[in-house]
Image: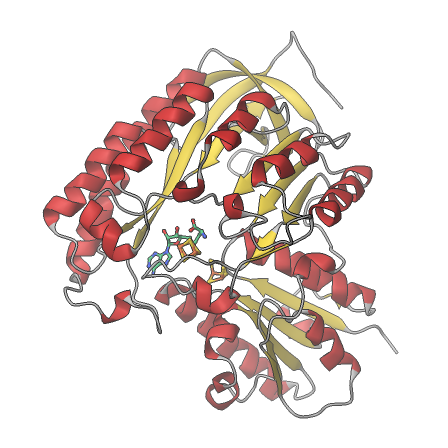
Amino acid sequence: MASRRYHLTTFGCQMNEHDSERMQGMLESLGYQEAPSRGEADLILFNTCSIRERADERFIAHLREAAAIKRRAPGTVIGVGGCWAQSVKEQVFQRFPSVDVAFGPGQVHKLAEFLTSDSLTAQGYFEFESFTGDLPAKRARAFQGWLQISVGCNCVCSYCIVPSTRGRELSRDPDVLVAEVERLAADGVSEVTLLGQNVNSYGRDLARERRIPFSELLRRVDGVDGIRRIRYTSPHPKDMRSDLLQAHAELPALCEHIHLPLQSGSNAVLRQMRRTYTRERYLDRVAEIREQVPDCAITTDLIVGFPGETERDFEQTLELAEQVGYDGAFTFIYSPRRGTEAATLAGQVEHEVKVERLERLVAVIQRRAAERAQRFVGRTLEVLVEGPSRTDPSKLRGRTRHNKVVNFHGIGQAGSYVQVDITSASSQTLTGEMSILACAGR
Ligand code: SAH
Ligand code: SF4
Ligand code: F3S
């Protein structure tokens, strides 16, 4: 019999990208192969996100398309994993009868159990049992690897659905993580990204004799031969301590980029959001970053139109964005999420006001990012080649340690490190020429 084929669509954050690589690894170890399109698959899988309403809507449109395929080919199995599945749980089968199997982020391994059993009835699996990071992976890029250091989140940000979809924070054992990085390095990975909802609270749930701080974990990963770049996402400003900045100053592989989600520049809004820091404390952290790691890129996440946000509150976000001068930011319109505290708050902001605020914020972010990026012009930067440029195939595309995309003329295979003379910079990308003086191939 020809081997069975799967098609997987991934929505959401980098943790979902990671989890999808594990789903693929697991399916391929069961003998499944990837199908080029949904219509050619025996198993149609979705790894879902529910962070904003738009994420739900996008996914449901895809699910309807899968259901139509299944009507034509009734043997097709439809599987739904990830945060949306977890947040609706068993209701998924009533609302979408075409779904055969649904599972939360801590239950990916159960998909294998379902596929290898003779079960004909729909199954749902939603209790956390194991880290997806313990499953085999099929990496999207040979030279880049994710490292899931923890799952879940113990914060109570009032707008956020993640604590209810990913559960309480659980950390993986440091020895397991270092062994995984060693395996990744032996397999050709030179850039590793540590993943968690709140990476800098890593380890607090581990037994005392196993517990190490996040900065120490970075130190151990930095010590693995072959690892040239370390990234992590996301840290929480409340847990941003000196030892982490010290690690940035000292560890050669740790990249000069910190993604430090702010959400709002208004203390009143931050309080309502339950972010547990003030704008002043956030700015102190930024000042400390600038002092310890002067060239560090700083990026952030911002939400506009949180319930009760006044024009004055919003202006404080604008002022803070102006003052920090982010190298980039993800900006979001507040979206009420089921089961969250903020969805029930009075003072929901009108959609048109949210859109107008978003536009004003994006304008400040882009102007400041473009201004900040000028510091790279005239410098020669190390770039990890990712492949051809998306806009101009005669050029290559890669990333600097600051996580800036560079489009440049030159030669170099995906996964190699080259030196690029930066000739111009915009808010999003840098442009350059491969340096003729120095060629740091691998
Ligand atoms: N754990 C990470 C990422 C959380 S989700 C962190 O705390 O940094 C990524 C971003 O989505 C958040 O930082 C926030 O800016 C945004 N977000 C989360 N819930 C949202 C909601 N209900 N509406 C709009 N944006 C939201
Ligand atoms: Fe959500 Fe806040 Fe946890 Fe981030 S820290 S995942 S925004 S609850
Ligand atoms: Fe979405 Fe879940 Fe990530 S809700 S953003 S996939 S943690």
